[in-house]
Length: 225
Picture (cartoon, rainbow, N blue to C red):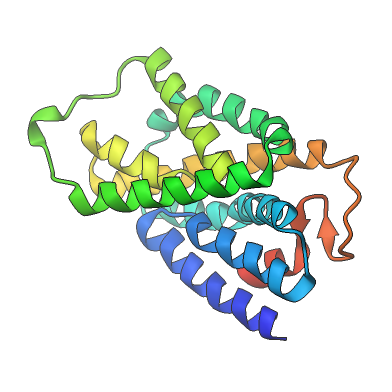
């Protein structure tokens, strides 16, 4: 029962983050699911971090879709920008299922920790630079960025808003439009990565009855609620 309340409270924070900042909430969901599995289900740490990342990506399909719908209604999404990133994003997301399945859990955990501190440092030290605003025109460059951001996001279990929002703002995209567009990009990352992770988990035999592949079902249910 305690686990349920933890997931519901975490879901509320995630929903606010998704709607207000364009964040999928992965930086919150991954550690919560990971340590819930370790504490309440005695799941081995390597499997717990993999499940936390996979569950976070799967939850973004739902939260990302809702945030995308809301931002579309408010005209905060530029689908022309999405078109420039979509090929690279989908290729990267579809590779995640293979990559995440072969990396040891310790590497995934360390990468998550390093990324979290790196993003915190960037946000803390960020200063607006109005002289560096360049429009996004090159589709090859955009898809390369989309591919890289998608891989990083998939390994951490996030929608990529902490990467896409500042990138879009630095390229002369208004903040609200950058946040809304990032929500849609995060939905694509979550969907593509979830499909590839599900395929890679077909031969996985979970020890927990509440697992669906690498996804922890109680977390999905109560987080997205």
